[in-house]
Length: 470
Image 1: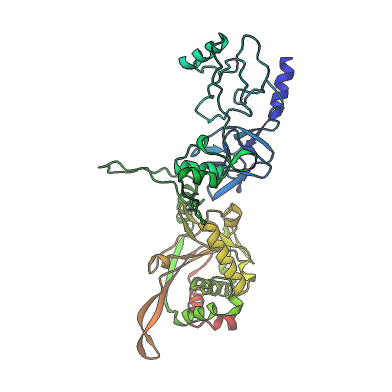
Image 2 (image 1 turned 180 degrees about the horizontal axis):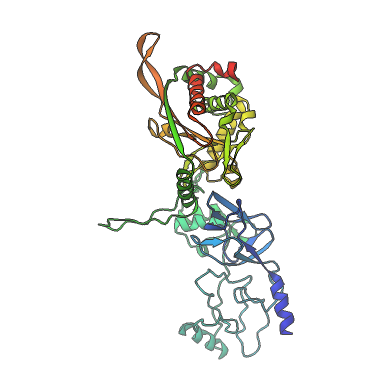
């Protein structure tokens, strides 16, 4: 009988393992849980957010049920293949469930308390043990006895002096509502639910927080996915702060060291008058064909680089160390370096060489917004061929960028500033910027690198070349 019961219970609980969400990744850090033990989950529901060496990724659960246990707390780095969450896929179907699951209600014998067992299950937080219960037969090994007051209550009930206190059921609320309550310092047990089935809503939490009506536009209380964790307060007089390097930042550090000491870098510079490009940007912003997309200098710079690559296709290549071959790419996956709270990431626009100017503008807008939200997927950062990094947004004139691993070139764009410039034989105020092109000297010699950089500069000086050279 015992064996049959154990087998039945084992079938009730399904485990979800940390998947490989990238290309051969071996580990990921759990950034945030969106569910807690006792919450009901459905197939496809996002249960947590993890950070890999490439990006932050949301993980959906592949089955229905009730969360039984979270195996790791937030902030833990977990190997791919390890179980991170267990789900009861048949809640209430058996009485011999593991200790974290609440036993099904049953009539109490004469020697037992006659209070009704709470419905559902008692939530268990990893690392905090099992909630105290009026029943001892399912206590976890090593768990201490109930407090004296609870023992007295149980004994009193058995002696006919009154019912024992029964643990209350966990308030019903979705994860965002639980977080809202936590942020506002509201105990969900004190909130009156108005949602269907007794579920606590956002409005219920707001009503509990203040006697005034909830504003029509509620205050945004949920932390954006891309926001970094609040830094620990620095002790007064502290001379150092140590920050663990992991996730995206760790991968960046390793990749940059590998790139800097593997590929022989060469960087060339050119300062160019981009006044006409800035005028073109202003005109395109008023063009009805560009309505709904963001137009800025980066759009024209990206198009200029694509045209320069078309004119000098040998620059779009990769070095195959194992086979000692140069791999020519007949497509351009244009990478755009994006600074995020978790570090620098380089998503790329697939087959950017085939896109029209409006299409390229839309792709750039989507890429940037996705990166800012922390939603960039590992696939979006894989397979890049050439990259642009816009250091000008920080007011920097130029720099010597390090190649994105596996790529042949990276173009740095400096700040566009009004400067005195000789134009048509006279010194005039003109919009000027400095470009820097770093390239892998195994693939790109000085002549080829100079041609690419000169072509980009020529297009930005005379944007009409986009038509004549494309």
